[in-house]
Length: 117
Image: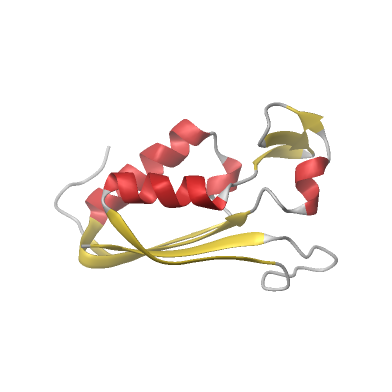
């Protein structure tokens, strides 16, 4: 249950969206929109469909894999569309490797900045 009385300036989602099915992503976007103040931003970082792990593990769907644990690899324009459909303005969306290194892992990530107008 979301407390409608509490609103935030920013919401930060790092490596969250690719760990949930698409229906939960849509809920997260909707709830985030409701929780943000006017002019508030959501910042998202998630694994891209172009990440090397997207070709490993048991295939659950074209974007979902089970390799150690569940991952859904994000198609940037689909995430962009979902944010816009909910009412966000996408200020920036990029896709890169080399920006979220951890030990030997160098994922290809999608980074998004969107604002509630």
